[in-house]
View: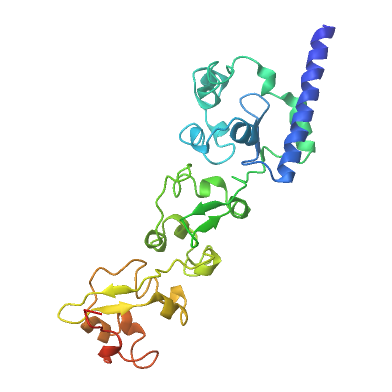
Amino acid sequence: MKRLIFLIMLVAAAAVLFVQSASINADEGVSPGGDILYTKPVKSVVFSHRLHVEDKGLSCDMCHSGLFDASALRAQEKGDFTMESLYKGKYCGACHDGKTAFASNTQCARCHIGVKGFNAAQKGGNGPGMDLQGPKDAIAIGAGDSAVRFSHWSHTKSIKCDGCHSELFPMKRGKTTITMGAIYQGKFCGACHNGKRAFPVGDCAKCHKIMPAPKEDLVYKVKDLSPVRFSHQFHRNLFGCKDCHSKPFAMKQTPGRMNMDAINSGKYCGACHNGKKAFSAAECTKCHIDSKS
């Protein structure tokens, strides 16, 4: 009996130390995803993202691809979140099967901190879902000087993980091809950056340190006329990206749909080249070049 009491006290003490350690890590901002305190099916288990991601090297999509939702504690709301399910290979049991990791029906005290551990966590100011932050390092989207550096930390202050994952973005880096055209259509970043929920995507300088405009001139071929050469570099000295994108131009090279009738009616280049904001589109030689030049 004395030995049993000693073992219980030992587990409780270890649980308190573990919870305190998790809290310190979160405060120092080194956790890639924070810690989660589960109260079901047995009270209670602390899950450490840091242990699994940084120490064990697991990628996010190993768990967030069907085993667990991207929202903390969503799993324990489900009726099958039971120890029996874990024994059958669901949830934590997908890895804790005795092969990939220790079996879920063994070494119980390595996960379960018990009622005393739960109370210690509560007194320490840690709720059931603790400090979810995402990867601590910024993610580069795109390549080169115009790439965008995305910070999970600045976004998780107001958005939960399932606000983006996995409907807008898969839970794996490099899995998505993001284009400005798609963003302007409300996809990816554009789902929030629409000028209502967050600043609009037309405010390019808020994300791009260097604007991703083409360095080379664009050459438009016009039927029965000399081609037109368009310089982003020249126009950027006068206008911002949002002045042209995505109206009157989509964020991609216009595939030969422009014609002088449309321009003269105020579309495309004619939105500015109307003789008021810029020289008139009727001054042909200022834009149309010799096809040999």
